[in-house]
Image 1 (tube, one colour):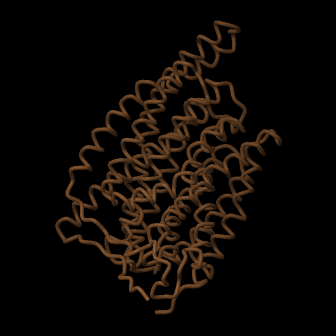
Image 2: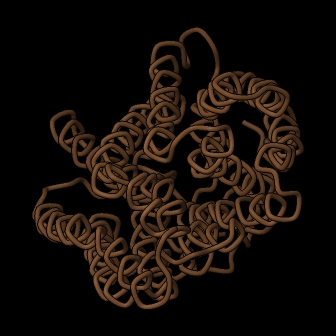
Image 3: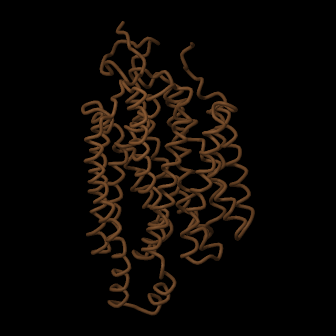
Length: 429
């Protein structure tokens, strides 16, 4: 039997801090780009004249890339390592941002989706690198705390991104909407193309920043982590496992990530259109996502203070899943500002779920850490599927509120995983 040493890091106290700063920057970039989808959905719905179902292909194109590219990302990381992989991921993201230029000029929804898929391909590689990196960089017991810190970077970036892009896209949305209603034929096409062109400047700037950061990360002296010895070997690891699929708690964790990301994305990316259905203007509704990210951040801050000193990351996860069910139910049964506030609180409930699920699923994977991380990243495809189902239900029912009911069984599964699913096949101490 080939022995496998536990996941470890070459970090020292000094470069540990430096690594945390760089990784925090990566999570900032992930958040900045990810949560722009909450604006692109209503923006492209208008600019490309889409139904709700069609508009949610924004999330589909973005998150399905995680499913398609997770295994290739794992192979790339195995070949070049975590740190070089981060730099490469930023370059791919920048290329995806540049695709928005011809997409806007031609007002082609398909090209917009191609740009989103390419950007997300880079983000898949980045996720596959930074999540195990921040988990392995220190003790497993405090992994949720480190991931909560990273989550704050992610959500603060999302707030900034939503605020900046909403200024570009929606500051005169009411006037444009009224003007478009009075036009037809070539005049309407010209106005819609002019509307679509609003994304060009911010995405050029984004691409430039990503290229610069790719260079900086490539030159940064980050400690490399050792996640496995010989993953290709068919010989059993120290727990007698020869395949990652012989780890039930990991497989169940992938499903949990799938459902969690689905509800997390749906709760925020649907909020602008839901706000409009509750009588708010597009300019006001486009900022509701900032409230959700603030709620997220508050939850992360509580996690840093409370986990693991006062409450374990697993119990915090259970509590959050229960709150998610309660807040979602209240959002369905109320209206106006009350419903909006409950949907914002749903994001508060989501705050400690990702840092709760990931360490449980990746625990004691040994030489399977990188491939296990890739499978968990594939689970992010839940953000592609659940919003699309919601969008179809919204079109069929002509209602954007009742379809939120699809979130309830997702929370029930999360509770199951946090209470017993994480123990399925877990090696004894």
